[in-house]
Length: 154
Image: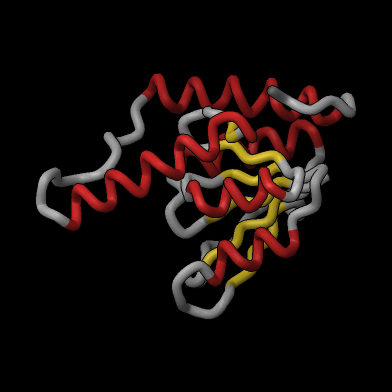
């Protein structure tokens, strides 16, 4: 079992929470980005730098992640690809992507993109707050515990 992080847009604090869980549980973490990332102190953490381009990091994660791996991403299309192939994905705010919710989240994302491009709304999601970080840490712990016991989180 590995933890994959879509590292281009993942907040540093979320990565740090994952790194602590990795150390505690002795799980490898793979950061995937299209730019060079800082070196890590842990032998459990590695980085993959992919070519620049739209969805190149997402494609790499979707192709390489196994169904017993966990993918951390805010990218809903990537999460949908992971869920469709039987994998497990968690967003940086602690919400688990499931077969039941990923379609709805994709539709909402597409609607918001359309509204932004039409100038009807501006901005994106709210900044990550303390409650979000706590929710993520709790959800990560619960998800990893279930996965290590051979159960699927729901």
